Image (cartoon, rainbow, N blue to C red; front, side):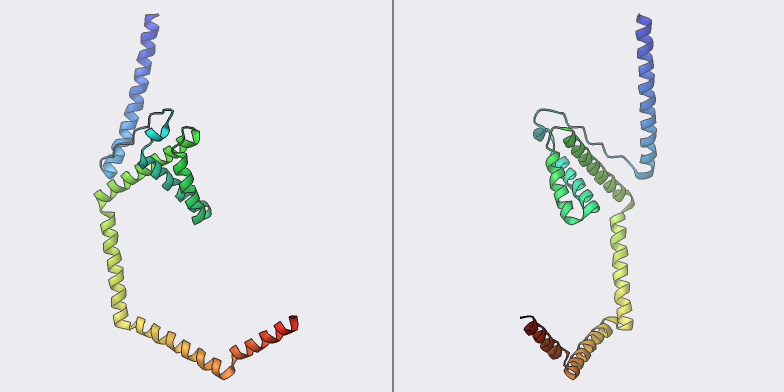
Length: 187
């Protein structure tokens, strides 16, 4: 009997060690690519009152996940409803609450990962510089070709020509008379 327990314990230890090694290898690959992995959020302890154990960050992140899902699926109104619903579900101690909290944990983890990538690669700074370059290029082109002035003049000319056409052909007046005749006929 002792040898069976010893063998079984030995097998479990080998399986756990193998699983741990594969997780560490995957984490090392990610760390090489993106730097140090931020710590994963700890699972909340289940209790009869989940609102006391569920952090505000997880509830807020669940609301974000629900809002984005609703927005993608059905538009902004459903996005707002999804955000409120997911935030409320995250406070419940049931399967739906577990799913909402898990989605909140994913959002938090993704935010930490994005922050780590930005800190390593300076994505936000590079994007700001690129946008400033595009804006400056647009200003340079406008100064050279006077696009803004030409657009203003074209719009002004369009308004003036429309007024002249109206004065010449009296479209507004004719439309008004026709509408009055139609209304008089109906009544």
